[in-house]
Length: 379
Image (cartoon, rainbow, N blue to C red; front, side, top):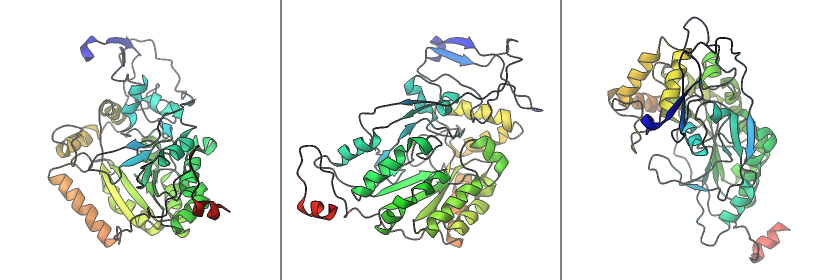
């Protein structure tokens, strides 16, 4: 497939170890806008002498509305503890260079690189679709996960408020939900999350990848700073919302040494649960991450990739179930043991109560009949 694709020149974007590349977009994670695997034209970096005076102005964020037909995505993976999820947005402005959702932008005919973090899709009908889908006859209630692909509280949520509208529907119908985010914006919705927590309907987790602000700035350029994420954990915990943390991804030779400090800081802020995921580099993400390493950490590039390959069966990615999250081999086993010992010492991950599914009240769709008791409680 690759051999049959035509190539177009984008100029030399090679790294200089002494100063940043002049083509590096300010405030963005990806170094390039590499073509998706389905495109007929493939962009690649070559030296042709034309782009020596290009400025490093950052491309603007563009948001397009996508009127989806379905909002609940189903999952059968044994590696994750949920079978359904909601993603209010495609693409993510946070620009995390390691995001395993980047390759999904190829299905839109766009690049998993800069396009993923600058050309976003919002689903304004998400809340109404959710109401319809949980109101269908025969619907079996189980917790819905929000934030499993792209961040539900990325910057555009501040104005779009799609995630908030989804939460309103879930609260109205007493439907359990879990939330994962890198953004302090989640505390905006405490007025919904607190009563849901009192009913045993919600659990929130903050992803804390590093406490090093310099690393965070280039690794996750538009996500909340580490300090603000810890602040969100504290505010949620103080308000009575069950809150946990994700140390993800663990990047060998880059942030793996921070496991102790990140977990300790999160536990001190109020996190009760913790998990971690080893760096995953599916499809186009492998090349994008190597470019990023060459740009920002050229001295560590070989070490990072070699250690990752040691835990991924000689490759940078292992998509097999039961291997893709934690890796395999001696180093992966030692990392897992280290994590478990830390959790035990910090009293993280006590036996958690399942979210309550018994309070669910199915929506009454057009043409349906109200339940007598639901009607009474509405007044």
